[in-house]
Amino acid sequence: MPKYIVTIGLEVHAQLTTRSKMFCACPVEYGAEPNTHTCPTCLGLPGALPVLNQDAIEKTILTGLMLGCTTPPVVNWDRKNYFYPDMPKNYQITQMPFPLCLGGGVPLYDLAYPKDAQKSIANPGKVVKLTRIHLEEDVGKSTHYDKFSALDFNRAGTPLMEIVSEPDIDSAEEAFAYITSLRQILIYGGVSDADMEKGNLRCDVNISVRPEGQKELGVKIELKNINSMSAVRRAIKAETERQIDVLEGRNPEKLVQSTRRWDDDRGETTLMRSKEDAHDYRYFPDPDLLPVRTAALVEKVRSQLPELPHEKRARFEKDYGCSAYDAGVLSSEKELASWYEAAVAADTRVPAKKIANWVINDLLGVLNERSLTITECPVSPQALSALVATVEAGSISNNQAKEVFAEMFESGKSAAEIIKAKGFEQVSDTGALEAIVEQILAANPDKVAEVKGGNEKAMNWFTGQAMKASQGKANPKMVTEIVRRKVLG
Image 1 (cartoon, rainbow, N blue to C red):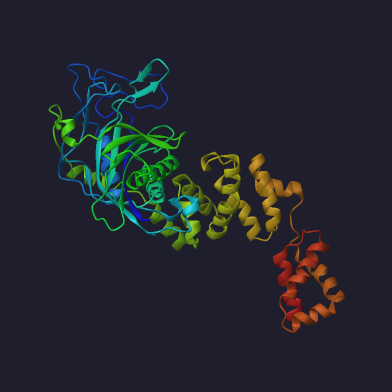
Image 2 (tube, rainbow, N blue to C red; image 1 turned 30 degrees about the vertical axis):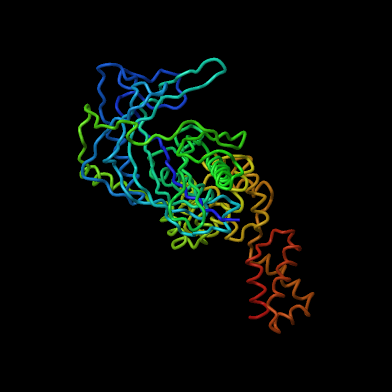
């Protein structure tokens, strides 16, 4: 059986976090009453003229800087002509030959891959090359019912970045990682909410399949408007299998350049239309908008560059002693990284690595169980830091701390309140602890001899006996120090 190579390119559409639309002053607001945020400009009424949104242009340039793109010195605006019911002007203002960003790439983070693929990443550290990022206006929203369709033009005119990759993605797993990594970067930069459920991040997938050894790419098939990362993965797998079936004669269809729709319920793609080429859209420069010189905007935006996820991950490893995996988890979400750093800053005497362990092993587990985000966490960063500090000071044991943490999460009370209520305060009175240790040493001369003979592990036995004798209230660190001093001098 011949083997096949799949080649994938993605076109990701990201709505920008601007207060107003791309060419008018109408507000951008998700969930508003239908058709309440419209005006003659975004409805395409005769005589209405567009005015550029500078914030949208700056956010697109910032995206390009984060992804290593270059910005041409002059960019312009074009009309893309086609009819669709939810596009009121019957053309879209976009960018064709002179977009805001060229080149660059998206780094694929290891933890951005699907969990079942993270142990078998084919190309670790891969950076998917980009073709361009251009800025355009979004269309309205169509809702289809049994006998009619409803149109909401609130979204029409919303600033929309189209981020176009090269055909540089080799698998459904890489496509998943690409979208996940890109989404992280957009959120870090504050340029987009990148929420696929709200429709402000959408994806078109271009797929071609060719036999191994054939240099020329196969026929390009576009899958339109996929709105979840898991659906992208499923759609690519299904369409790849369909194309292979056609090539091997198991499917009577022919592969022609076309646009298809992904039906997630049925797990299959269906034909929408034959694929248009650029000339079908009759692009021409928009006569109502002047070209934009970008040099001053680029310099202004350069000072706004944030620390990106991979840069933060490297700093967490270097400055906080986190493992590569822990640093990757902590930097994967902007809010989580900020929460962790707030906990570290709350008490610089507490090892940052210990706080990382608590966040990853305890806090995130409970949040996942309750389907909560870190911003909804009932335990503050300062409260967790205070709990870890009590463990480090030897005031309570690790097992006791886990019990305290569980109640902190449920009640919102501080660690100190819960420790006092549960009677977990440990005995740290030196005189009292020495009396307990002396009794145990006197009653166990054979164990004393073991320690003196070089078996320091037997020291733990004395600590355990002291904990039993004090009903778990003895400070274990102080007990161990007293045993060491009295036995070894």
